[in-house]
Each structure stands twice: as C-alpha cells, then as structure tokens.
Image (cartoon, rainbow, N blue to C red; front, side, top):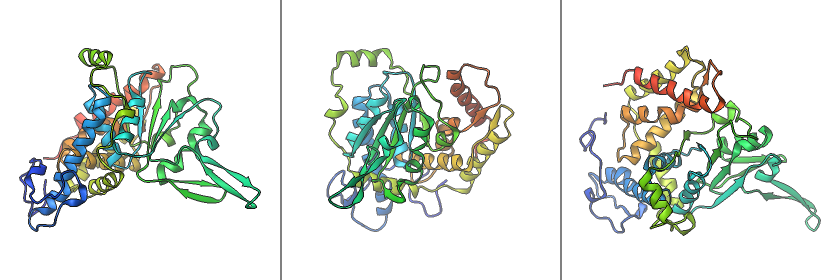
Length: 356
C-alpha cells in the first residue's frame, strides 16, 4: 500500500531508535534533516513516540481501558469531537480531564442542566459604561478541551449552540465572530436515553461528532486496582507529557497520512452500503465518509504508519458511523437503538469486500 520509492517494507512500524541524530528525545521539532530516511523519521517515528507517551499517561488515570484511550487520542489527532455514551460513574469525566492534563491544555467542564442557556456556554456581551460600548465576556467554551457533561440533560436550543463551535472552531455572537483556541475538542457525555430528564441529540448535532465511544465497566482485576487506589493518580495529578504545539504538529502529520485509491474506494463502498441497507432509513453522509477517513488516518499514525491499510478503516467503522445512521424500526427501547445501529454497521463492515 505504500507508494513508489518507499524505504520501509509494508507493515513495518518505525521506531524512534531507527533514526539517528536526535538532539532531545521527545522534542518534536528537534529532528535534524539528515537526508535519506529523515523524512520517515520526521513523519512517523517521533510522532509515534509522542502518541505512545500520551496514551500511557492518560491510561494511568483511566485504568484498564486502552482501546478507549486510543479512540480518544485518535479523535484529538483527527481534530474531531467525541460523544461518550455510557452509564454514570465509569470514567467519562476522568478520560476528558486526563487527556487535557496530559497535553498541558486548557480544560473546562460544563455541567449541562435543563435550565441552561446558550449564553452560559458561549459568553455574553456586557455594557461597560466607562468604555461606552458592549464588551464580550467569553464563556467556558473558550478553552482547548471542553467536557460537555450530560449534554442530553439540557434543551435542544442549548445543545444546538455548540454546532458552529464544533464545526468551524469559532463562535458568532452579536454580529461578531470570535475564534476558539487550538487545538479545540469537545468531549460530550450523555446518559442512556431511558434515564429521566434526557433530551435526545438531534441528527444534525450527532453528525458533528467524529466518534461515538462507550467506556464500559472495568474488568474485575482493574476494578480491584481502582478500589485499592494503588498507583492510580487523579487526572489533576497528571503532568503534561506533550505540549500543545506538539499536538498541533501531530494533527498536521495525521492529515498527511497517505490514502491510496483502493482505500478511498473501500470507504465509498462502506458508505454506499449504509445508504442501500434495508435496515436503515438514513445512511452515512459525505461528512460521515470524511470523518471515517480522518479518523483512520489518525489511527494509522498512532500505529506508526504514514499510509492507510484497510484495517484502519474497518476498525473504526462502528465508532465513526453508527451514530450517523437511522434505523427503520424504532420499536426497541431507546437505550437499545444505538446498539442496534452498531450491529448494522458491524454487519456491513463484515460484508463489504476488503481491498487486497
């Protein structure tokens, strides 16, 4: 799957030890240009080292969930937002806080309630008499990583106030546009819809989330480790292991991961299959196809490759696509609909032929 003139055999993952002349381990911008082979070092080996360091640090706080940590990091690298759907108390808040602390970024937690207004999130213009004008006071959304806790407990009007911020990384208010800091990422948690006092997210907002993930209960041994509190730091105790500038460069590197024509055809085949499925009334949109490709590129970089393979796409089909489709039958309990959609997408990913 690698292009002509590639220096590495397909499937081989570059390590930082493959490259010589590193002046400072872990410093993203310290790789010298040494000619042949230095491009691979710059593009794959050191990003891999930084990503593994980030995942390891987040995993210190969220015990026994390496797959969940990987998906959160993939979402960050792909400049996406995460919807975390699960029961209370399984570590959703811990994941968001640990990710923010690990990159030394700004972090805000917004607890959504039924009486919350859009201005409580975005900010408000306040009249200042001494200046004779309205002055914008930014809300908690103006930070790098936002935890939108229990987003489906607030009204659709307040939920929709996040749309522009999530899609364009900016906020428009009172005929003015205010850019949000970068990187910017929303991690929204929601309780299952059968819980009292919840409002389902509209399809237009669900489509803005790059991935939907579930944390799940820990295994018995991991839960005992949590109960002992042995070597399990709180997110506040975590020290940054990469910088914000490193994250921005990792995001740019992920965008340069190569996707050959057979991979693009595979993505299109998966998306087309959702639109033809007799089990679905709404298939995946072009935005959903782009989201799958972006997340697959980030996953390939996290695996130490600068090119995509079919497993990158197939492995992310469910978290990237299941929340973007609508089932024809809605006779099941509300909490079962998401699981049913995941089963449909999983079945489609098994049926669509994988390129060879």
